[in-house]
Image (cartoon, rainbow, N blue to C red; front, top):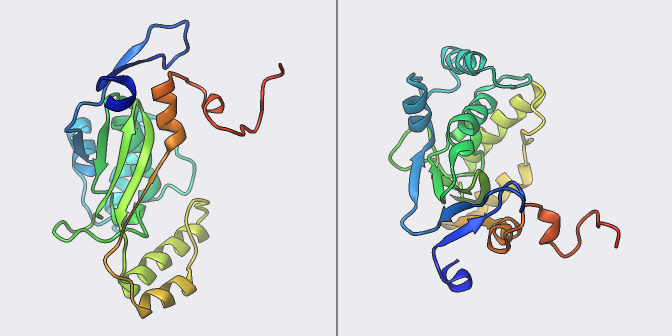
Length: 214
């Protein structure tokens, strides 16, 4: 941003060129937001971290219902937390910020946090409510990975269309060994939208699915 725009601060017309621009400040360091702790702080509630506990799921379900958030079945802990994160955190981020410490049930491929039970070594970077980057330490323990896949399979059987199945080939590969590894994916197209002051992704990708007639 600094090299291209000459400043950490940019103006972005999030709602179109006819509406006033907002300022986005990329000045480091960026805020780090622990997901569950922030949801608790903003909601004024507390909930356990054992998301396999029906009582914890019920607490999350009650909060989502109270907020009248749309969460179609299955109302699993992962799906409920995703809705709460969107409502309390993602929808309010303007300047770049990291959402950290995602629960294990939301991150089946991420390594379990080395000092905080129940969460993973993962972060997502958001700018102006949009996810720009998703990154985590790779889970390289085959037994734990199989455990996570089995949990995903149960969620899929319950109707969660975002849950993954059991990838036995991947687990077998992990049994042969995977060194400590981290990975991240950046949405360059979304970042380009901010730098080019465009609010439609079709304006910044080379081959959009639909082109306006000339």
